[in-house]
Length: 267
Length: 312
Image (cartoon, rainbow over all chains, first blue to last red; front, side, top):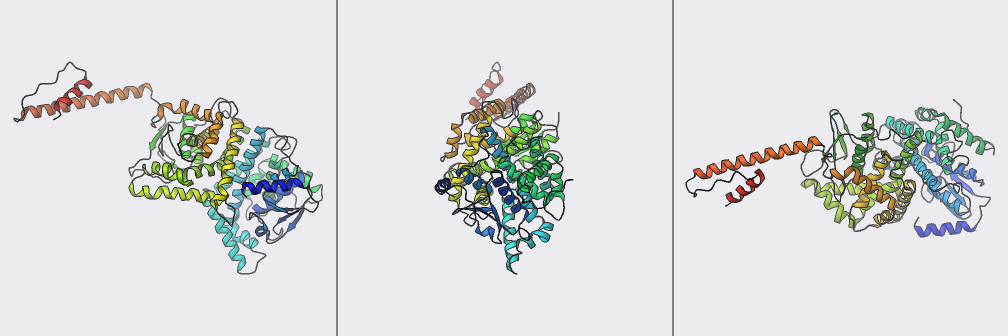
């Protein structure tokens, strides 16, 4: 969005309080949604729960095409549509709810840096695993991505998306990475997150922030999604404080409100 | 002494040892960790590859990207992060990710995509350091790669248009610079008094932006307003790179003596040559007899005097 459009939107956003019928759109949970999209959607849901804002989750097969930026999830609030965690956080802030107000400048910088780390490494690794690893692509991704559509559309859409993702991987230098290198990067990222978290309940001590929501979204999805092999979730399971962190957020923000989906098996 | 590692990278200019961000990151890290690095600047000869610069060559391996090169140096016990705590190590990774996501697109844009900058500064500079037919192709290829990267990572589908993305990436870059400035505060390096990997990365990305003279300087102006980041770059340049702007390692006593030896040899060779020419001339009948050069002068002066007399 251009600068003017963004200023306009935040003005409008500030005008009204959060309505009761806000909805979050994602792809079909059972058959269609993929690892990376599920992680993003869960992160947004966790964030909204942490802000105590009610949201209804609606699954639509064409969620990706409805979204203004082409990425899921997106929320429909009042008469505005906002997609992706970053803009949603700003939108919610314009409405007067924020999780990171209590942080000072240095902490805010750290929070942004860690969010970029998660996006840079975890999200890219998830995309790589889904779209560039032949085994996963053949068995899981192609089938799931095109499942709501008839033949031959399902194949065409899946190949088109795969081509797009591979192009992006090549542009950022991940095109030549092997699966082992990608898993090593994931391990490094988890190690950094684990060291930053230490023994604290949340990343910035007592109160959760959007960073906690983002990390929870990704780690929980990695831990609970069935892939062709378990290497990715094994990497995360090595860090017990991250497991405890996910369990804590799941209990506090999801199970209490009766929205528990598949829970984490403690290893 | 361990065998020196050879690094091939792009050369320097505007007071910097290298104009290329990634090469500069590796050079800075080598200086901070004390790794002996022999720098081979890419020039117009066909020797060496220009593909995935910077490239580190040792006797058995060839390592290519900055992250991998730094890992390799760490495994060889040249570790600049020795004193960092685990949390600081994690912070390093996070800030590097921040720089790559937010600052790198705008730096790439300033150098390679913005037409004024590209055609008047970047392209001539790189083309002058690449041998002929490749100099017509390689800069263009790097420029297209940069544009591609920016559009694919920042452009919002289905409209991959540059103008919409430009405003966003410059805004992100300015925010990133502000965040780095807040984090640095008044300390000399990011983690205390000794420089580390994060300092190498920040220096590598900021120094070219700070020093290279561009016609369109939006981001540079913003950087110059953040005085602690400018002071950070200047400090590193002065303390670690002052004696080595040509890419040679700092002169120790041995190198000085070696240089003096070489100079003496050169001068002796010259004076031998001059005497030979002199003999030849004396033996040839056409020329009138010449006066022999006086021997009491010092070698350098004698050489210049004789040369003056011998010139036609």
